[in-house]
Every structure is written in structure tokens, then in C-alpha cells.
Image 1 (cartoon, rainbow, N blue to C red):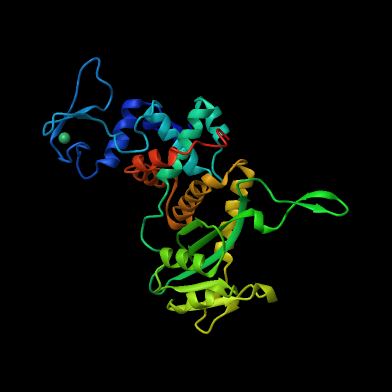
Image 2 (cartoon, rainbow, N blue to C red; image 1 turned 180 degrees about the horizontal axis):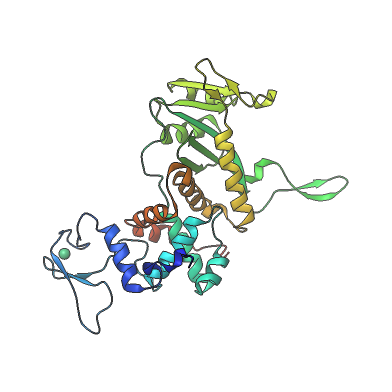
Length: 328
Ligand SMILES: [Zn+2]
């Protein structure tokens, strides 16, 4: 009989789901989220007790593994959260809120909140800088969704009001990619030297070798790196073989952009500027934890579960802004 990934007990059974999450979140011992004491608590048993409630013997307070994670204050059963994580981690272009709503049978609103919390769990922007000695980091910019406030309209003498199609009304994104490794994307206000400096130095280890296009702003940035090579796209130069046999190009980061755009335009139709950074975190996560790097679907799901820890407060803050687009 074929084995479906959804046959796993933790995706079907609530007790097993809690056990799965507990084993990962508390892999260094069961810590009380109230007082911080580790390994001094016991499972509360009783007919009316909910699943996975422990009592801390130090501070006498009850707790579950959900406290301090994206699962906190959610009424969605844990095994359905795990199903959602599997779907989002396993779909190359992501999974739309609508699809999540239909597949899991939760309301559209719940699906919307779940998917945004999951993107938060996938946010790895706080981890180690990209690259390092002997490594190549590519940096490039792209223009994504429309800026808030709608498109710019220009009165054309012949055709009347025309929607402006330049990059000026789209939100720029700067992405850095380790060649053969992880990706990190950032939504920016503009593509000035100052902005690029902030993103590049905040993302990559300057011991790496930087590869960019011919954009002037990169010249001074590149001087701070162990090496800097630029290809001149304006002169139709896409790749250049360097003395040591490596190739100067930005094909890796451009490949990432095409994946990102297929996801944003093909799967998530209503990505707003205000939420773009969350989608970027999602695409960065899947890219940085992809099969080519030895991370399979199971491992990727586990990493997302680990990422769910310690993100609750951030989410609460971010959520204070009303979702202007609502369920998309
Ligand atoms: Zn305690």
C-alpha cells in the first residue's frame, strides 16, 4: 500500500501531534514557560484535563507546549497545524489561503491567520549571516507587488488615463543568495546606495566574495568584501570566467527571483506591500531548506516547527495592524 505523508500519526491524532511538537520544542528538557525551571513538572491527568497540560512543581502553574509559540491562543487542533505546516513546507510555490481553507476545512479567516503565523515560524532573518570565507554570495534587486495607494496613472494624449507600468510603482526587494546555500530577502523603500549598504552588510559576511550586476552602488560596497565581481548586464554579459576557475554571474539569485515571482503571481494573488515581508520569509525558508541541500520534506517540516517557538509576541505586535486585504 502506498504511504501517504498524511498517514503519519501526528497528522491524524491530537495526542500524537502534541507528542511530536513536545519532542522537538522540549528536546533539551521540558521547561516551564512561566518560571523557566526545566525538568520539574508533571503531566496533569484527569478526565476533564485537556491534552498536553503539565503542572510546574516550582511555580505551581499549568502550561502546555503551545505557550510562547505561534500555536498559542489558537483553537485549531495541533494535528491540523502540523498538516498546514506539511502543506506549506512541501509546496514549492507555497499554498494559498483559499487552498488551505478548502483542504483543512477551516474558515477562510482561520486559514489566513494560520498561514501568516506559519510564515512567521519560517522567518529565519535573525540567523547567521550568509556566506563566509571561501564562499560566494550573489546580490540582486527585483520589483515585486504594487506599492500601496494603488498604481500611478498618467494621462496619455492619445490613449487617455494609463496605468504606469514602470518599476516606480512596484515594491523593490533585495535578495542575497549563497551560491549553493541559503537565501535572504528584504523589502526595501528604494534601491539607493545607502539602502543596499544596509541590506548587504546586514545580511552577508564580508569575508565572502560578492557577485553583483554592474550597478554603481555596489562598487563601494564590494570593496569591503574579500572580493567583488560584477557582470555587465547592460552589455549583455551574463557570466564571465574568472582566473581561479569560478564564474562571475548572478544566475543563482535570478533563479530565486523567478521562483518567488511564480509563487507571488501564480499562487498568492493578493500579496500586499504590508505583508510582503512575510511571503519573502516563506520563500527564503523553503529555498534555504531545500532538497538540494539535503533537507527533505520531513526535515523541513521539523525545522518549521522549531521556528514556531518564540515567535508569538512578534506576531501579536505585527497583528495589531488590521489585515487590510483580509483573507486573500
Ligand atoms: Zn514554573
